[in-house]
Image: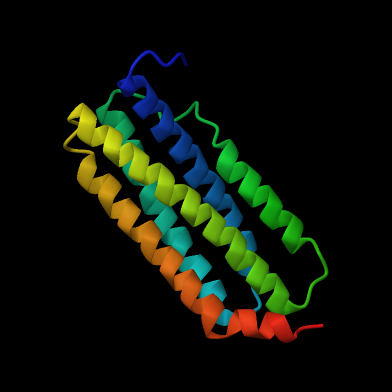
Length: 165
C-alpha cells in the first residue's frame, strides 16, 4: 500500500495493530501455559480476553473506514514475540522464566502504547471522531496491563528470579 496521505498512514497503522493484536492472541495462551506463577497465568488469560476486544475495536474502525483489517504485518510485535519464545524454550528456573515472560509482555505493551497513542493522534488530526473513544479506551487498557505486570514483577517474581540458580 502506497502512503500518499495521513489517512493512508492511519489505515496502514490500524492494519498493523490489528495484525499485532492477532499475533498476541496466539502467543498469550502459550505464555500463560509457560507461567509458573498462578497470578501471572491469570493476568495473561485476562489479557487474552481484553486483546480480543482490542482486535474487535480495530475491526470496527476499519469497517467504518471501508477497509479490510487484512493486509498488515506487525513486524514489531512479531519480533518481540519471537524473542519471548526464545526465552520460553530455555530450560530456566520457573521464576526466571516468569521474569522473562513479564519482560516480553511489557515490551509488547510499550509497543502497543506507542502505537495506539500514534493512531489516536492521527484520528484527532483526521477528524475521525467516532474512532477516538475506542482508541483511547484501548490505550488506557494497555497502560493498565503494563502497570499490572510491573506490580507482579516487583511484588515477588523478580526477587524469586534473583535468588534462582
